[in-house]
Length: 302
Image (cartoon, rainbow, N blue to C red; front, side, top):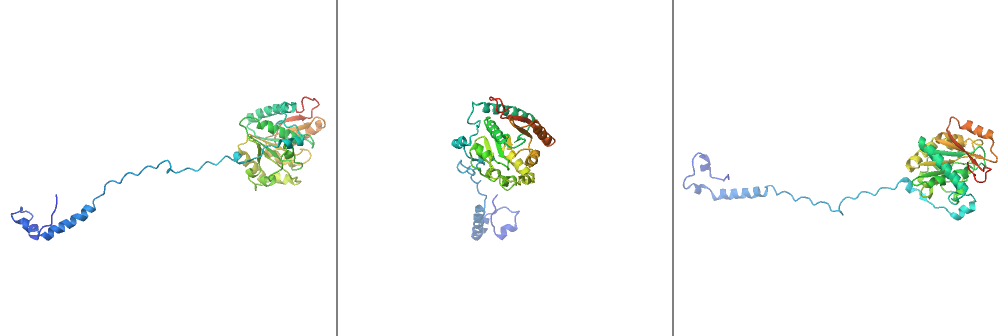
């Protein structure tokens, strides 16, 4: 019902009906005031529903950041130098696939993997009673054999600070700061190199006669734990100095799951093996004794 502005006489008698001539009582001024009041009222009326927002197109949709590569994929790749390997003179299984040494290491790999998977282990130390037993030769070839398992990841670390030799055996130039890594100041990606897609190596080019103190430090255990976790490695092989000559190996034993003891078939004695077993007892598991330089020509590793 519309309301109009009326004169005072009409408003004073609301009960009376509209009489003839009452229209004249509406002042022209009052009618104009009514019209002036209606204009802003109409302007203040609620506006129509706003137009629905336009959906974002494919180009306008927010873009998620690209996922970062895994830590393993961020390790720098440095393929083997075949010529340098030949100069090194070691019969690596990657070069002599049909030879008896390669077959022996493949057999050792298979037996080792069965044991590791059965017990949920990953870290294996390779050492011997004395220098010259062939620990580096065995550690390198075992790591190469492990790396050929499809879908696997293997890490080989030269932890022999007395006589580092993994770089020379692989025909690679020593790179990275292994001591800095073990102390916690160098990240894994700045140390490891990948000569194969499934193999990462930590090389060591500087002998350190005070290595035992470094290996005993808290940073060493934390660095190795972080490396195994972030790399997703299935197996880690640690080339260590001789058990009976230095305490470096004793410092590492609590950090590994088991030990492969390399015996020189032409020099190692039963007394030396017994002394090694006694030293290992209570610290880690002896996974086996590998016979290197066996007198049988067709079985250099047993």
